Image (cartoon, rainbow, N blue to C red; front, side, top):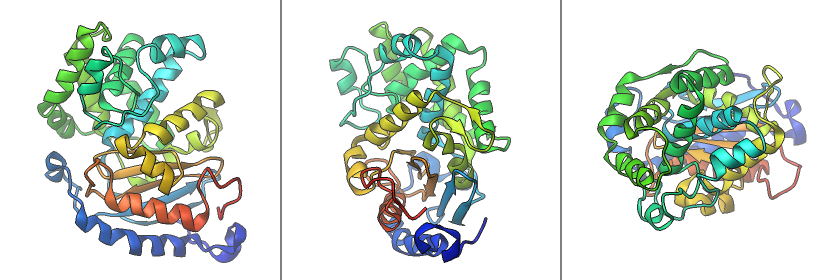
Amino acid sequence: MTTTTADDVDQGVDIDQVLADVADVARPCAEDGEVKAYIADLAGMEPGNFAICVTELDGETHAMGDLDIRFSIQSISKVLALVLAMRKVGEGVGVQEQLWRRVGREPSGDPFNSLVQLEREQGVPRNPLINAGALIVDDVLLDHCADPKGELLTLASELAGEELTISEEVARVEEDTSARNRAIANLMLSFDNLHHTVDEVLDVYAHQCAIEMSAAQLARAFRFLANDGVDPATDRRILHPDLARRVAAIMLTCGTYDAAGEFAYSIGLPCKSGVCGAIVALAPKQAAICVWSPPLDDKGNSLAGRVALHELSDRLDLSVFKGPESAL
């Protein structure tokens, strides 16, 4: 990781010192959170783990903490699955007919694994970043991919710039604790909004949640969404600019479950969280950020991660609502 000085960045800000100050404020907040029960027993997941990584579009990286520990990315994988599905169905009519006809784009206002809203709305999930919506996305991948799990892992590896793996242990735990997701899938099946068997869809979902990445790899992998769909490491277009912006918009409004409004208010960046304790955030045209701290709040978001992103956004003027000027 690089060390910057005031002369290295715009507006004379020492980003590394900012990260150190942010960590000092955020880390103690983890004591008030709780590590997800089934994750607490998995290797590498300790309550005291903490990492923060800011990777700019030009590759400049500012980071500190437990940067090299890989953990299962859990619900953060939903963004990558959505991106792959968009690539598979094609732009325009394909996205509309094969995705948005079957899953909405509205915040849920309910817990990420709720069935209540799904029943009321006849098996159409509110958005692709809650569990029900992610299962629809996986169903679409099964329509278009000979090997959805393998293709998703390949995409994640290409974006991270390193070969990644799926933890079969985590996937097994996901499947062993999938009773509610199975109920969600069966409910959508009863409304004819699932094309494949429940077992097939849950298998894809369990394995995408078990993709293992570090905070540094997540920040690197998500830069394309801060760069109008182009991976700045390779100049490869991953998504059409319009679709990349729409994914970012869904992250802003839906990426942190029923706390999305608070995240938009206090942080002002498109974010996606996971029960692994990681949160990925986008600073459009500037950088991708990942904060990792396993203890969660009652909404399922990293407590220290949320505080860290709030502090970082305020100190560097990163909010998308503050205009183009920032300290990066």
